Length: 277
Image (cartoon, rainbow, N blue to C red; front, top):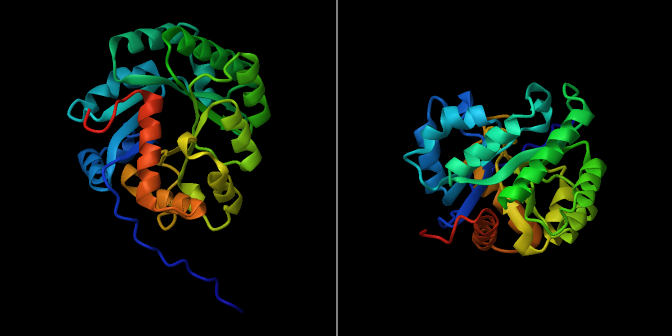
């Protein structure tokens, strides 16, 4: 019987502080014990800015003060599709008021469709998706989209709602080159998570190689989706170096160069200025 080959973990590349963590959930219980250290490790790993995701106005109101001492952390706010059935229609107005009161909220998200989990009926997901898309347009804010097992429906809804050409980020992209091409063809961005490092994910790495460099971002989706060699452990922004290394290898370029490019793309998309601002 042959033994399964073990992966040898390479250390993450040394990166300049020019990158952006484009999607993290740092306000959850997973980070209660070492929240400040997580922020510090991210900076030491080259993360200049972090985009923190709040999944309800209540979560934003409760936890935004966690980031008072960290002005390089910005927010996105929206109702996740799997939670849409838990909210009444006035939640959209609450999101509006939060945006108007907090300049750190830079996008509406993560919103979209998720047909993998069955708790929330598709009709309710679509209703809240459309309402939040309309709110983003009214507020002139970018959109961050969550899509799982609902690609054709998500594309169709976005395109029929007139969002081709609108500032939109496809969060946690895990598709192939054809899907990436449709995203880019609509004028949107995509963000790549830790699974790009998985040995079996050659299709995703090929897609990363094919995407124009000005449309690429990188994320952890912390505390989820840890890259190799940390798969199965809690993820955090400091682990982005492993992800960017796999992306850079797929594109045959230096990790530090791609890191800065993805960071600049994120700063442009979220309107969070240039380095040092």
